[in-house]
Length: 230
Image (cartoon, rainbow, N blue to C red):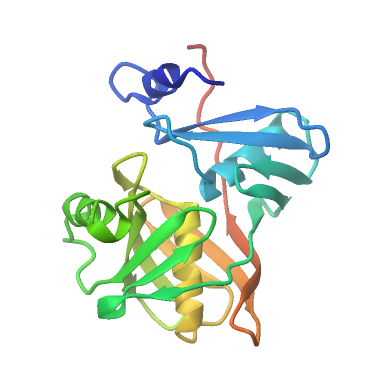
């Protein structure tokens, strides 16, 4: 798939189907399938929620049963379906960068800047997210931006400005994962519950003695919405 104009047309909310991104599934020589993900602007990255949807779709197509190994842009992943929840095994995270004003930067297959805020409901995510995404600190590649409000000792509320979409998305799986690991650094126990405008997710993980996150799983549902011809 190299027709990026077609990707942008499909994702266009006025002249296409309308989406934050496009997922393609194709055969892979050693894995159960390969997931190819495009953001709505045609750029590529790992998509955590997209991975859950791809696993659910592969199951719907009878490519897999309840578990799978699949290739994504950052390498091989595994996942499984249990009690209608899709569990995606994310890559280990070795580094967490602490920034000014308690902000953090964590790469979970996609880069994420994490900001803690008090008034998340009234925050202008588009304005503040774009300011950070295009700041000098991230000039070369840009970053996704996650704004976090702490709810209690085991859950948080997150809103996300997503690069490649260049706006707020209702949920970002790699971002939810990054935020959950950030909370793990702050003493939260696994799994961490994360509320997003698009629904609730959980992230489980192990934090090793050498300050490394491993055995990370992004957990949540995926719902079949429609099928059609374009």
